[in-house]
Length: 300
Image (cartoon, rainbow, N blue to C red; front, side, top):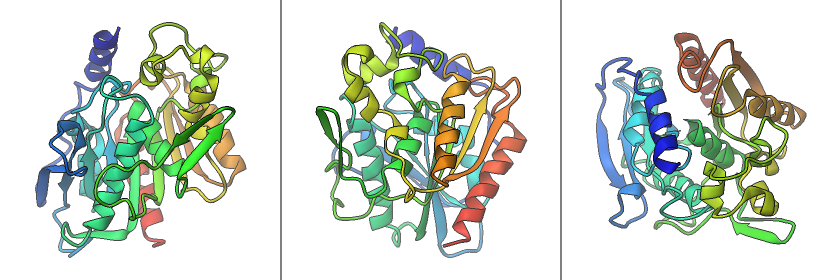
């Protein structure tokens, strides 16, 4: 199941080719956790502009949380578009569900954010604005980061998790983000079966919590970004194709409604005929993502 699902996700993005020239200064394979693990590495790509510092966007790949070394996929998928829009693009690896159970994955994302903020001067980054985006499970992790600004730990029922984590050397630095674009991420993991109930069997969410979702609803709630949203969170844009065969479109419909209630939704874009990447990724949606981040970054 694991290899098949991961192969499907990767194949969905194999059509992606370069959207322009990788012409700015870059640093590859920086370790944000101060260890020797491949899954704790990130890349920084600066835009080819005359600006001395650049506001940053973190981009997270999709893999159903099965992949731990696909940051290059995130750059090819949408990083180049954001780089061409004038942003420093940070693509990150994170632990797969086979490396460690949740919340290890959000711990890694937050550690990468802290690393970028703590080392902003060294890498010509303006720390006044750090946005985040991702597709599929990367959209989930980006949404989780945006929904948990300043949240250290959280309890649902009888289950409490450490949301922030202690990965890396910059644990006193903020891991907050300033804007989020969620591309067809799973958001309410208790409703992944047609937005009615949890999936049964060998699902990616079962793999990441090491248990059957229906029997671990408190943990499934803690895996779901919509559990955490409040009025103080970052603004969101949500993009999803209505023909997505992997993550139900209704996941984003429900999320958009919840974000709107909290005053956090800037725009919800439904792509007619959009699949899990193909068709949903297009010039128009990329332009809208860039415009959203530019608008929010100009407020800082």
